[in-house]
Length: 367
Ligand SMILES: Cc1ncc(COP(=O)(O)O)c(C=O)c1O
Image 1: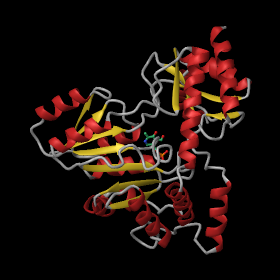
Image 2: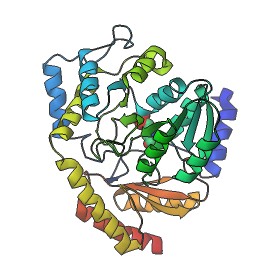
Image 3: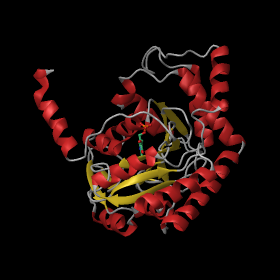
Image 4: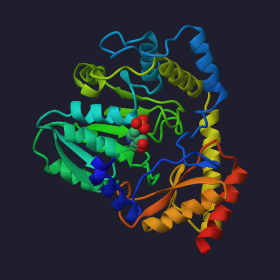
């Protein structure tokens, strides 16, 4: 390993600054996953997997969708997803990261503008870097800033990029106003619903007017893995024909597609899970206020801002020692000085445990 001394010293430098990312095991109550509806380890999906295996769904796809990798399960899933999300067409990809890369590197054309909320996910940035359109940020959730930038733009089509529920703050984008703005300027609204899909049924942009491209990741609220892009047929066909991360990649496992179909089927038949989740989230918001005096949460993602990196890491470690799997999030994932505990509420953790967790957190934060 002596040949990699520069890598080793770069890691050492990150460690000294409290910024080193390392893997750690799961343990304790789930206050860390994005498995919002508790589907990932559910009988519902386990039984769906067994049924799929029994009806002969292949485990591996064997190649790119454009070659022999295109399986019936992929196409059935896409048809069902288009119906569930009320879009003209859908495309299944290996994950949200590659899907965002595909969207932003392929759909906005040379001469177009991607106008993105300054907080959009790293994967949208990767896509923009690979794409040919111009890019400009607008201030987080600030519709008038977006409007001013749209009005000043003189080039081609504008693609407004936002998340519906922001992954680190859990706040919700003003989607209705953004959709109206997009309609007014003949712009496309690209909504990353990673943290809304499932938790909020078909997502928060569902039913909004205008040209909307949706990104529905399948590894969070849907409990599986992969991502569905929803859009007009011509945009989906463009992705199939041109998106490098779609073309030059082995198709996701057909079994994976079968499981996503089962998750969507459950959500289209009943809103029991999203409703139970919303009730639990309301309980968590109330307990955060009672125990910590914290208010203003919009969703199941509850950030508790600590400030500097080390105190955030220490607090997370102390909570883990009490049996609560809570993780600290540090820059560059979040802005400097806002290191935090990111506490997602999932159906994996009962209400009484949420209460005990906030009571323990209040005691630890008072130390
Ligand atoms: C907002 C957002 N978009 C995209 C992704 C990437 O999705 P996936 O985990 O399916 O690759 C994530 C996941 O971290 C996310 O939070």
